[in-house]
Length: 206
Image: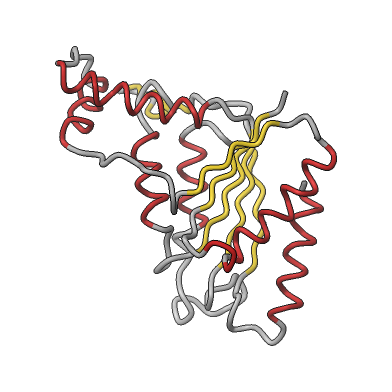
């Protein structure tokens, strides 16, 4: 059975355009795949642990092949549990608005927790990084108020948004990535029409 992890990065709830476009993808996907399991991760309400000193030390112990002490093991077990939820999915649906050219801080916190050696990637001293989450797919639903691919950059913003997400997913081994953009959401002559078009693109992508 296919499992979809739907990650909402916006705190705007029903006002979120990224979530509304992602919902269109999900509606079309579940219509064709009614047996699919949907796991919703709403980062506005999810209680994420801080990536504190014990977690950082636990990560470095893994990289340097050292044993964990008691506090580090507890920290690593928490990391592994959250990363396991991510790794168990077959498809990642991410609804992500652009914040200051990048991604919302809650999503960055989530990535910093789960993107760990031995869990999502391997690191060879000679060959570099290798992704462990191979054979999976991702759908990136991207919104931004002023920035758009056709807008002059950096005057209307710079895309560290999609580029960061794709680089992270690639490093984790996810290479099959589809982008659905509603950009810009504000500086457009036809926001309603562009929104409907983005939803149609999302349905087609599903």
